[in-house]
Length: 264
Image (cartoon, rainbow, N blue to C red):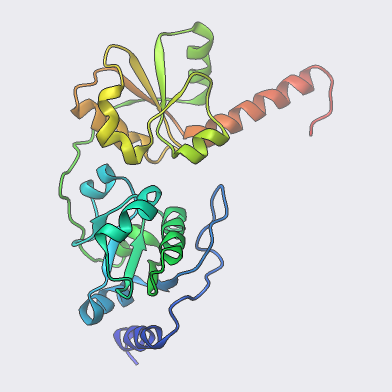
């Protein structure tokens, strides 16, 4: 049987009732996300769209979604699914497919979980997210492309020097409120990426802005967006909070060893 035939047979099986398959590696990140949704491979989603016309939802920020997404997708950040999905998709029997920009797709898992809680009966995720879709050779679209700008990246040891020198800068943490409340740099303000297009005017343009995300993957686009909005002094923390926390732990370890303590 051809790959297309296999994909179609699996789609028919899902349509009959196997909507909520559990996939053990789909949501690995800092926090464990529930896994209520069925997976569709890019090939299966391509065929599924022809059969069922599901609603595709990009769970990244408005900025990221409008910059690059699967054609025909709605933009709805995972943080806003509970409040806004019922307005966008009123028929809760309608199949809904969530995806994000990473292969493991933590954000898509959260969005799918919230959709299930809201009573949506046919909830799916795109296996492998947008990278898998592009890797399979399918098109993406750009509703509002953000021109990429050369932005200075501070490695953690460089950022530590900035802190020690008490340079005049403002740390803007673009992670979600949940991650920010768990752990953030002293003095940082939280403007989550999914709100940046609405709240960028709150950020002062007369100071150097240091953007911080979780792992360094989103701050580059956020910095380019701010430069487009006439911010002249924008830098980013290379590797985000993951890199910073690792650096701090290593420095603490060095201090213990230097003081004669035993490593932990």
